[in-house]
Image (cartoon, rainbow, N blue to C red; front, side):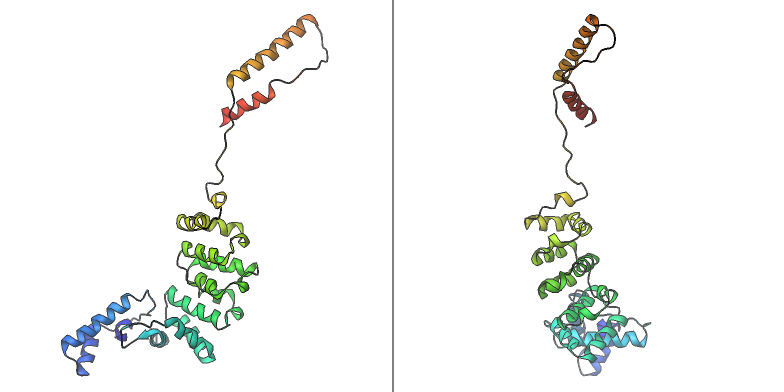
Length: 274
């Protein structure tokens, strides 16, 4: 029963059903079936409490009646289509925004209204604050904002927009980015956000996107390799040549010499500091 979702105690609902002619056993079965349907609703059903304001209670009732299949005690299989349909009219849209404001909807339920806003053409006229309130996850909001700022959003297929708005994880956001072929247009900080998430990184790699340079570890450090015996040999040769010159030609003189030590020497430094 919808009353279960609206916060009424089960025993009160059972009493109501018995007053309608059902036996105690039948009434309990209806309540239990209804509760199971609510538990499987992914939070789409709005729940109320006794201390809710009249506005909140009204919003809960209107939202639930829109998406709940009372007969089968579960969320309607075409719930998103029902919300989309409501958004087409001015009154319907006003009711959805009222529900959004007062019914304390879950992020999944809010995203349904976001999808309806896109489908009905109302999305573009909304402020970013209003749009963000209709996106299920923060990572989804970050990507949507980036795509809007870059001018890519309007050119995306509806399915990709819907996926971004309804995404509940970075992995789902990454899949939407892949499907929309928008990786190359994303700002560096957004790429890093996705690349630093293990599940999202896996999806991106599977799609052939090189994400290693964007993760927090960065590019692996390459260490220089050198032969220390070669360095010592060239160094000794240089010292010997200088000493020999000084013994034969005392005093200050300018001379030319071939640098045989700087290259190996630098290699040695690379080894020391690696």
